[in-house]
Image (cartoon, rainbow, N blue to C red):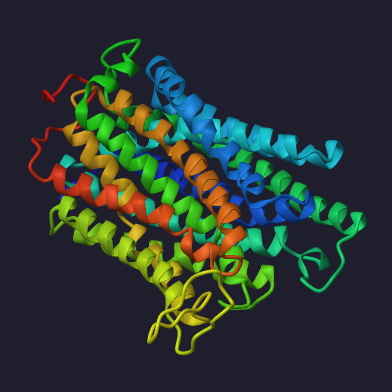
Amino acid sequence: MQSPPQGATASVKTSFVALVCVIALFFIWAFVTNLIDPLVKSMKVIYALGDREAQLTQFAFFIGYGLTSIPAAMLLARIGYAQSVLVGLGGIATGCLIAWSTSLSHSYLTVLTGLFVAASGIALLQVAANPLIAAMGDPKTSHFRLNFAQAFNSLAAFLGGVVGAVFLLKGPLFDKNVVVTDAMKSVGLSFVTSAYFELAVAIVVFMGVVFLVRGAIAASAPQISQAHVPVLSSLSSKWAKLGALGIFFYVGAEVCVLSGMIFFLEQKEILNVPSQAAGMVGPAFMLFAMVGRFVGSWLTTRFRATGLLALCAGSAALLCLVVIATYHMAPTPLAGVLPIPTFPGVYYAAVTTGFIPGFAAISIGLFNSIMFPTIFTITLERSSAPASATSGLMCMAISGGGFVSVAYGAAVDALNHSFPVGARSIAFLVPLACYLYIAWFAVAATSAPTHQIDEGASLGH
């Protein structure tokens, strides 16, 4: 048997490195994104913010998707996939450096600006990487590749949460029994800015690796048939719009649950642990998601993606109901504790203590696992618009993470007036509504016609 030519072997190795680099993109943006969950707690304490104001940390980041994803798709059509990856990485590094400059400005606005810029870079990566990984191989296994890449996305999300808890929530600033001083706030802010500087350096180094294999990435990319893809054409496709709403509500649900996880778990009625400990437990949500995505990658090769999505969305909705329902169940009555009527034989409590509601909230991550990549590919396979345009619209919809998290924060603030103990449990009505839409989307997509993912016009809508 003849061995393959040396040039062919080198080409295969380069293509493999290119595939690894694209998968690494999913890791990088998830790590950056999930640093924000502990950052919400950090900013709330450092700048003495309310829940809604603290959630502006998420809003500033995710609104970046809303404002830049369609321009990102237009840029992708002009400069191609490989160059878009490099520009996107550069945007993340720049945003991290702006966040680092808060050490000079001491302004919450500087942090928000840095997050917005970083999100703009991630938006370009998302627009490029999702169709790219779907196209890097047999079309029949596109669900597998995207779910496999998203598994590493979940690993990075877990690590981002843990690293964020270690570096962004350390020090006496987050001790419930300590009086916070300006000196403590200054030290806490220095931990934040140092972490973002080190992250910027790491991303710049990775950009060098991507630059070396940019040719192989370009060779694997879907063909763009026109210089200016009509991005807004995605709005004429029923399934592009429905899929974008699915992404909007999925990301919104995940972000509001994750960003509120530290506050939820540290409550004395739940785990009653310090902020940093809650920050270490919270990322188990993404650890469950990672396990779910590895398993989901295998399941999508054997079962219909729409059925799996409906099952996962329904299960997540049920877990939200568990968190909400625990507000109304306890073995002993607490008459007079809450401003709600009592009835014979009916018992009330602020929240069931300990394990049950906490585990239910964390377990949502297991069923979140396949939602994003599956919604993405289900939509690409049904949209009548070009792939890059549809991808741009869906990446714009990632801004749901900002809008829904602010809605969740506002719900907590409003409920605190009447239900000061159970507000964070009852506010799970917000993600519950999101998961119910996703379940409906999956059922509706079951009977819709599909087509191969490409840049041309496809089926009617």
